[in-house]
Image (tube, each protein chain N blue to C red):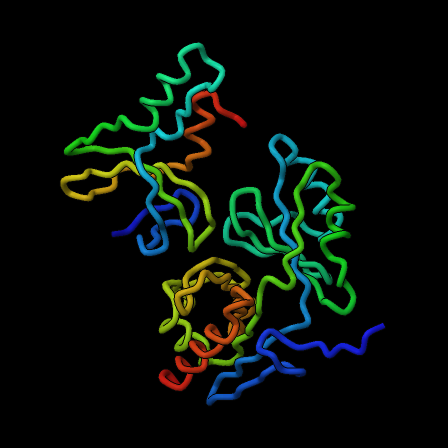
Length: 95
Length: 187
């Protein structure tokens, strides 16, 4: 499997490690009123789609950036690769 | 002062040099390294300070910059590794930190890494056995990071027949063994 790194171009999947669902970027506010409930959902509840899935990959043997990879879990086709930094910032996260 | 003996990453008192037909693999202990990362929102200040330090702009993705004693190569978004001769720049990290102030984060890297240089026409034959990088098509100079002998190494093309492999120092023997084995196989 090849991952088309947004900065470095196509790289073999052996250079990457997989973390999990890209929703991990949306870490809840620990000071919210219902923080306990939000963290329960954040930690334990995952969609398990048969089809398009957005997931976090780490370019461990490379530039060590985190990527959001959109992969079809049925075909393994990768349709989009973004820097997780850019995805987080586009959702208003800058720290 | 204690009477200590300096040893290289491979444990010798002099750098290990091995010659093959069309290739020399040499341990290069005489280089100081420090990494630099821009802090969020301070990228322009880091770029300006680095320009003064390097005499060139910080390199973009996969590139190298600088032709003075201090040179830099790109290692990740807003991150660079800086190199300089150890004899004149043993305090490289402190010098860079003094130039960057609070705008950049600087980490001493000299003793975290071992550098092996591959010089000669045979370097491509060895590197194509060892790693994913397409060394024949790399720009000169250029830098990338890839797995060599199961280790995450920087691979820098300094000139047409001259590559540097910079890998984890604690695995220097394994990395050296891998390069030597590949040279025996390929050349």
